[in-house]
Amino acid sequence: MPGTLRKFNLLATGVAALILSSAAYADTIVLRGARVLTMDESKLEAQAIALVDGKIAAVGSEQDIEPFLKGAKVYDLPDGALVLPGFQDSHNHLIWSAAQAEDISLSDVSDEAGLRAAIEPAMAALPKDAWLRGGGWSVAVYKEPSAAALDKITGDRPAWFEDVDGHSGWANSAALKAAGIDASTKDPEGGRIDRDSEGNPTGMLRENAMALVADLLPDYPDSQVDAGLEKAQAEAIGYGITAIIDPSAEEWMLKGYQRADAAEKLKLRVEAAVKVEAAEGAAGVTKAIDFKNKYASPHQEVMSIKLFVDGVIETGTAALLEAYVGSNSAGDSLFTPEQLNEIAIVGDKANLQLHAHAIGDRAVRMALDAYEAAEKANGKRDSRHQITHLELVDPADVPRFKELGVIANVQALWAYPDTYIVDLTQPKIGPERSEWLYPFGALKQAGATIAGSSDWSVSSMNPLEAIQTGVTRQDIADPNGAVLTPQHKLDVMDMLRAYTVNGAYAAFDETESGTLAVGKRADVVVLDKDITKVPATEIATGKVLVTLIDGAPAYEGEGLPTPTEP
Image (cartoon, rainbow, N blue to C red; front, side):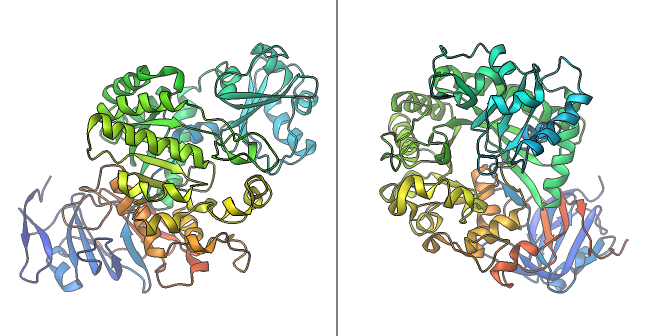
């Protein structure tokens, strides 16, 4: 390729740049006329940036960029626009959610009429022996899901629907029968079969009990996976996302990413974590290592193991230090401390990153204890283990994140007083513990590294919505509404770091991405407004003008000026 990169140098102006072998720079894009927020503390702001052959070649003033103009495609950006490093979503179930998007959606279904309207068209379209499958329902919307409610619509065809957060499944009677679940079936370890007053299954399966039915489902066809991934990736890039961590990748998902990469269709960088369950023990780590070797490709790397330590508060399956209000139960962890410690020690010794799902304060403590046990057993290293969700954290554990170098991987879009919080969470834990819901501010003050993520498709993957909510802790739709624990607010720069430099750090990619610095990958997003200067309640109204990956436009939005061509 003409214009091969030769070496780093400093121009007379003092701006870092790359010297190239030809006078006219091939494959060059210049962005100018807008504020460039590099997220590099050594040079936080600039006025222009040059991208050459997929790398950042220069960052500085418009005068500094002049040597790169010859032969370049130049975007004169609108006044008030903002140039940033590409966003990194550090917990995004992209390919899983993409495949499920082709299933029956029960999103916003609240009654039998809505249920029937969602399911009956699929029944008519699918072969009569096909499973009816889907997801997206929410206990906050559909209050009393039961097998009987589904049976009225599905008859004797097996049906299975996972809830929006993936911690509960809703089966009809035919699906329960296919799985051999009846009144005599014992709850599996780490799972719960909901039962009526006579001990009969209601159709609701929690946590590990979901596998009793889910394991019977046929694999998604490659065509459905591939088509879904293409759509989901386009959506992500349209939000300015250039890299993700897929936090619970099964083998079919890794195959899907690798297949897309081989076809040169995978544009996002994907770091993947492989789920390891308690029953697998150290063998689960061996599986993850095997997947790491088998499914490596230019845009995909397996680097982590995923540990689901508990469930969720609203169903009483999150593991708490003290009992739920009005109950003798404090929830159940999906690992014993001994099981979790063993897997953490073996995984850490294999140089794998640990990525723990922990909602309740006991689950958070168990994860921290396991990471500490791994450090004691194997010695301190640059492990960058993560704990994600962190809905409830005991104050005594907040300083341990910095002490142990653990990344707090947060979904800021959840941190506002919605139905889940007001009706399904605060009554279960009481007012005192509710002051420590999503304690991002306390984690920041204690020096924790905070990475931002969406948990898509549990919630929107638009980073601007998460950034606004992390700053305001209010419902985006009600800017004058209630605020959730205002002492835990972050500022807009905290949230931008979470989605850029800290996201790159969480993925061990900070030498290649996360800041706009010379020599790094040219992954860039341009917003139509400077979200650091607008009222906090307007951050989410920002739009992406262009997303560039490896220096090439991967998404172009409305309002992007036509560039001048060479």
